[in-house]
Length: 259
Picture 1: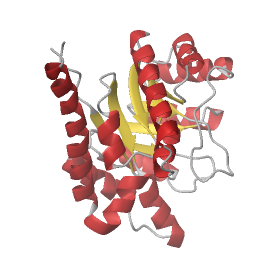
Picture 2: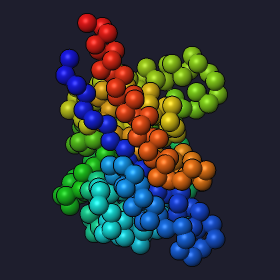
Picture 3: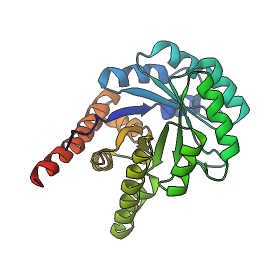
Picture 4: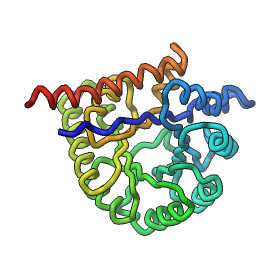
């Protein structure tokens, strides 16, 4: 069995900006946090520019693109305003997410299956600007088929339901959700998609999801920024990187023991 591809870590710096905006001014700076993350081993930086600019603002995106030495992944809704910003800034990648102003955080996956025309137009416009597009979707067959149909090269599987089941100590639901993620990752990869995952991940769940060989990138933000309060951002990222690497190593270990 060939070795699985390395797994990358994208660090989301949204909630550094949340703290900054709670008081106003310029501190703490998400660009500084991004530079610390890269120095600690992050493979990329993610930032979500929301319609209401509740955390990341336009200038943050411009500065991140100009100042970080790793790829920038812009999370965005499929709106004309956000498409225009992405076409102008040209981040390495754009992850299309659902967005409702009333939500605290992204509450579910994008309904690509129900919005094929809108999402397809967004994918084409961003691709024409040289931006690699991913769709943040639930681990469902219909959504994966829609991602293929609209020409998105990458998907990011929403891991929130699995993480929430674990927090609630609902073992049966957690097992079912993890199995759903595993099936979706395998289907997506066999369909030619690159597979990422994220939402609600901590050290333990990141290690576990890293055992799925089809998943090549995790995007993690809120948990890491929270841990940074207690142990520093660099240290938290080093711990996360180690957890992911342990998960990846378990694939080789289980493969060897099954021979």
